[in-house]
Length: 279
Picture 1 (cartoon, rainbow, N blue to C red):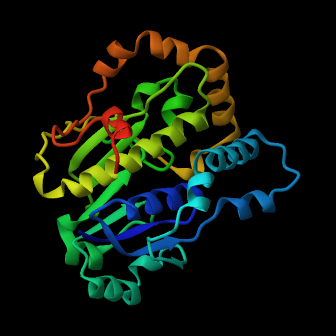
Picture 2 (cartoon, one colour):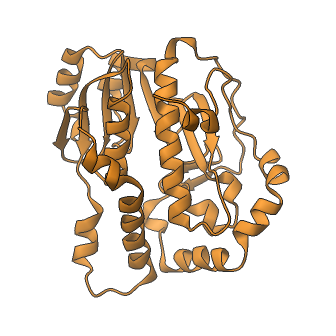
């Protein structure tokens, strides 16, 4: 299978594309990495002791703990090129991607894909949304469930990309694996590891995937915006972790998850099985 990857340029994005490129049977023709890095944001706010900044610094450190040993010791076969945010929709790159003739485009953490690429590739564009659609859409959609004390809404959604924001037809979803003593960053980065494995599975079984019944949308959909990331929200987040949110969730996990159904494609093996198998 020949693919092209549309992604970001943070360490978590590097991990996912390098892992996918090492999967037997998948040839990454090119990876387009939109370069919006966290560390310049942190550097510009040096001396700021806000909880928001500390949260971002801890996120960066946790990503390094989870991903850097793999990304620094594994040959990068993903043919990465770095572009500015939004440039993936420029005619130069649209034409270049067309010339690569990929079987599939996969997206993770890139800009909103616009009409030229959507029209050309249609259902050949797969996207992963770090959040559970349709419940949470937009930005930082695994952050807000933890702020609101609802870990059962933390997960990843694999979908066919359309012109909306996280509205494509859902292929498969996974819920975050959570353990006693977890921090928000441990939950998020473990989920990214699991997501990368599941993405490779979906690619390898793309032609055999079951068409799934979709979760009905409701009036309770949360649309999350980056501008809503406030000092107060970070305070609520860490208050929840310090007052037993995780233990309460684990004690009642089966019941709570049953009330938040997800799409689980029978063609896709479970995270636990994938973690025990070889690529």
